[in-house]
Amino acid sequence: MKQVIGIDIGGTKINSAVIDEEGNVIDKYRIQSNAEDGRDEVLKRIRISIDRLMTSEIEGIGIGTAGFIDSEKGIVKFAGNIEGWTGLRLKEELEKNISIPVYVDNDANIAALCEKWLGAAKGYSSFVMLTMGTGLGGAIYDHKMGFWQGANFQGAELGHMILYPEGRLCTCTQHGCAEKYIAGSALSINYQELTGKEETGPEIIAKIEKDQAAKDSVKRIAHDLGLYLASIKNIFDPEGVVIGGGFIETKEHWWDEAIVQYKKICNRPEGMEITAAKFQNDAGVIGAGKLAFEKLGYK
Ligand SMILES: [Zn+2]
Image (cartoon, rainbow, N blue to C red; front, side, top):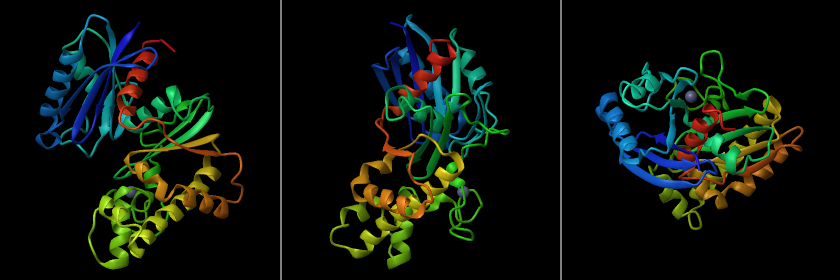
């Protein structure tokens, strides 16, 4: 069976795996990314990962990385998570040392590609993927156009859609971005606004049953997600919305309430399915593998 390597480059770790045509993970390798040491160090670690997994069966390599990515040329137009990553011709840089092609895309598109291939978005002709991690990532897919890139590779930055004008200051310089309200980090901000205390997301979730402020902080995320989904419906009207990312692990505390809020707030809520992502930890490597298979011409 045909095989490729899928690589998921994160700010803390580089996850790699050999993926076959059916999406099975054949072999895996994980290494710290050491992003703070800059681009050459991260590149070295990507090469180590490739060496560990390379066999004569491997036909191509797919990579997911955060930021604005020119996926045609494999260039990182902008990235804030790795020192020196902005401007990097990642495809070209890696192809210097190996004889098989390398393909690159944005990490949110990669996660969506995994869900479309084998997960919750399977069968949708159009869908929006939201990844609720520390921040909020987005991907927009339609079967006729593929993934929305934007004229400057800055499209589908759904976490920076303004939810509250003049609201919380975002790292992107705007005020009131959705990711300041609907993501793991928003939980701590909600709690601090209510109590003045600094607590981590897991600490707040742990005391949700006995602390009213913790409960209200989570409830606010559910409300804001419902509000946000109403705009997603009105702008894109997708067949489905798939929600993934690390924060989805806490969904028992907010999912139902978010759907209730969405139905209450939205003018026409029907016709858009909202589902949780099926893949969590392996979404990056499987999606990156799928990218390689598609670019190689195996649909
Ligand atoms: Zn922002």
